Image (cartoon, rainbow, N blue to C red; front, side, top):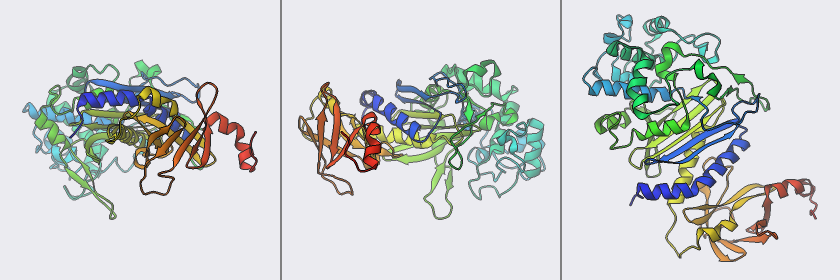
Length: 473
C-alpha cells in the first residue's frame, strides 16, 4: 500500500536534515561550487536549501533565492503551453509545423507535426551545423536565422525513424505559439504558465534587470585542474522555447506540482497524461531503453513513475523529477558545467524512499534516544554515516551516488552497541557497531565491524600517523 501524502511529508520533514547533510557531502566531494535544492510533497516544501557559493570569484554564499538558467526545463514549459492551446482548440497536435511557421514550407520539415516535435520524433537537426552559441562564441539564433537553419539543415532523419533530440524543433514550437497567440513566446508563457502559479522567480529568458540575483555559471574541472572560471549569462533569443528559462529550485517544485494528477491549474488530467505517456523509445547499442513523453523525460525509480526534465546551460546543470501520483517533486540546480544535478536528485529520491520503507519489526526507541548514535565517521577507507531515517537507524556510504541502494539496517543492542542486519554482502553485515563516548556525550570513536572510525575533524588530525602506520595518542 502506498504511503499517504501526509505520511510522506512527515517522514520527509524528519529526514530533511540528513538529506541536506548528504547533499553537502556530495557537493564537497565532487567539488561543485553551489547546489540549490528543493523537495515538495503535496503542497508542502519539506526541503529548500542552498549550499556552497554563488560565484567562486567573489565567494558570495549561494542562497535559495539565487536564479539559475534551467535550460531544457524550458521544453516542459513549452509543451505545457502547447497542450493548453490544444485543449482550447486553437492548435492541433497533428498540425504540420509548416502551417504555423511558413518559412519552412517546401523544406523537409514542412510536414513534421507539432506532436512529432514535442516527442523529438521529427528527425530534426539538434542545433544546426554551426552551434557554437553553446560555447558563447556567437549569439544564439534570432528568428530569421532559426527558420533558415530549420529549412536548410533541419531534416536529418525520417519522421518517426528514431527519437532525435532537437533544440531547433522546440524553438520552432516557440514560433508556432507566437503564430497562434499573436504575442511573443515569452509574453505568452508568462501569462499562461508562470503567472497562474505565482512563480515570481521564474521567467522565459535571461533578465538583465535581475542580473545580481543570478548565480554565476562555472566551467568544468578538466584533467585534474582545480580552478573554475565564471561564465557570463546571455539571451537565448529565438531558442528560448528550448532553453531560455530561469528559475529557483523552489519555484520548479511548484511548477512540478501543477503536473500532479488532480491539479487543474494548468492542464486537465487528460492533457497531463498525454504529456507523460511514453511517446519515444530511446535505445541504442544494446542498452536498456529510456523513454520520453511530450516535453517530459520518463523514468522508473522503484515503485515511482517519474517525469521531468534536465537542463544544460553553459555553467548550469539542473534536474527536476516529479512523481505525479505520489505527489513528490525533487529539483536540484548546480552552477557548473559538470554539476551532477541528476545524480543528486535521484539520490535524494532514493534516500526519501529508504526513509519511507522502514521495515516492520520490534518497536524502536524514540527518535530522541536514537539521535545520539547518528553522525558521519571517517577512517582510512572513507566515510560512513549512521543516519536516522524513517524513525530507525541505517548505515550508509554518503560518497555513493545512490547511497540508499547499499544501506544496512541497524538496531540497538545496548547503550554502546548497535547491530547490523544479517543479509548477504561483502561488508560486515550481522556484526556490531561499537561506540566510545566523549565527556559531552557525543561519539568520539565508532568501531564498524571491528574497524575504527572517528568524527572527520578527529580523523584528519591523526591521518598522517595512520598513513605511516603509527598509533596516534
